[in-house]
Structures are given as structure tokens and as C-alpha cells.
Length: 346
Image 1 (cartoon, helix red, strand yellow):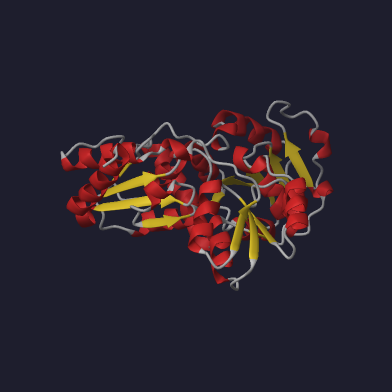
Image 2 (cartoon, one colour):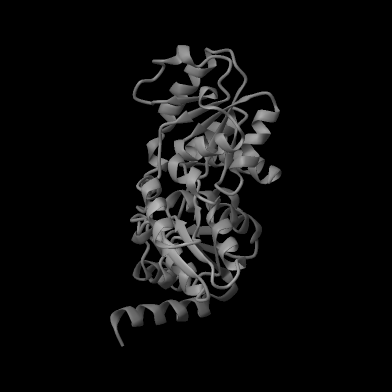
């Protein structure tokens, strides 16, 4: 047996021994060798809801990037332990907005005398979620971002959305907001250009992006349509606006998965999101032709390997907490409020 085979068998044995004490969660973007052992696989919203709802598990092992494990730590009971196979698997998008820079922007926005509510994408660090809670804001995911925007705008407030510009811009366009109603906040320029942020501005966007989705282009869409007659294009809302506009459908990873699964046999799909996820959909839907819009992998998700997962599980069998996830108590308490506000409206 290969070394990888020994590792996979070791994970299976450890899971069996740990039994119901263990809840193993994995994001859709994880490799198949991780997903095969997960008790639940989902997008950010689904994983947050699952982590919050499973009160019986003593140990929650989160196979994802670090902010997702932080979210589980915030939502779970204090007597539950959350562990991460690779704590250094960070999200570049999440790191594009620091709490210091966001607070500075918030102070400048306050000078406008407008009613503004901060909304942070779940792809962010815990201190930003806490910041939103302290300022009457909340969290959103790609599955509920439209509902959250509608909620804020219905209260007569403008949205301060960070850190993903593309998602904020795409959803704003879905809500029929024009470019003159959006203002792009460049953290390097600060308050420069604030004279443009007049009372008409309804959404203030942070200049951040997902590396995986940013490289997808409208040319990719056009090429695949030319090569595949009748193809349907479905993309993640983190894609650039030119891709989003040309797509037939757009939504969270769970939406993408469900849409393709429910489509008739023989249909052809181009999917604009991370390759591992697209490849798994392709395998699970052999009656359809599934093509990646572009073969892009999340390098940070790939840092979670079976070997690292086995190390965590074997540690639990020895009574050791390997790569235990912790969040400062005050930050966790505030972040929990922002996450709870999100879960209340979706």
C-alpha cells in the first residue's frame, strides 16, 4: 500500500474510534481525499449553521481556510473544541482588509452624516466581524448577500461592504443600483475622493478580491460558448462583473451544486469557481458535460492535507488538542452578535 493509502486508512480508523465525539466539516473547495471523510460538506453559510447546530460533538475538526474555523469557534459552545489541520491556511481575500484600516475608513464615512451600516463578508477575520457588531452591522455569505443588502437598504441606510468589491458590485447591480450609486473605497487613498460620495451613494465598496475568481474573464465565457453550443454558464458572485453579467446564473457554491444536479441529463455547464469543486460536480453528474470556466485552484485550501488531518485525529486519540482554534473572548462575543444577526434574517 502507498503512503497515501496508509494515511487514508489511518483517518478512517481514527474517525471510527472517535465516533460521535467527532464532527468533521469540509468546505466544497477541499480535495476529494478530505471530502470523503467529512460528516458534512458545504459552503460558508451551511458550515456555519452546521457548526452552530451540532451541540453533541465534543470535537469539531474544520477542513477549510482559517477564518471558517474561527467562525465555528465563535458559534460553538465553550466546552466544544475546534481544531484545524493547517492554521496557516489563510484566505488572501480576508487579509485584504485589516480592522485598523476599516476603522479608519469608518471614521471618514461617519463625517458624511449618513446612516451607514457595515456588512462584512464571512470571508474575513474575526476582528472584522466584531467591528460590525459594535457598529450595528452584520455578516453575510455568498448565499445570503442579496438578502442582507436588501435588509440594510430597506432601513434607509447605505451599505459599507468589505472586503470583496466584485461581490458587492455584482449584487448592487442585481438590485438595480447604478454605478453612480456605488463608491469604491481605496484603502491606500483613504478619504481622497470623498467629495464624490454624495447622498446618492447607497453602497460603499472595499477594494478587495478573491484571487481564484478574479482571473476569470468575459473572454473565457465567450470562448466556451463558441466551443459548446447551448452551454449554460453558472458562476460564483466573487467573479468580476463582466463574467457575472455574461453568465446565465450566479450564486453560492451550494446554489451552483444544486442547480447542476437538478438540471436535465445531457445539459452542458461551464462553472466559474474553484477547480476541485467543479471537478467533483463533474464526477457526480456523469450524465452532463461539466467544464470549468477556468482551471483555478485555491492554494490555501490545498494546504489542508490528509497527513495533517490524520495528525489532528491521532492527537485526539491520545487526548491531545493539536492545532486548537482560539479566538479572544471579547472579539468572539462581538463577532457572535454579527453572525447571529445574519442567521436571524436568512
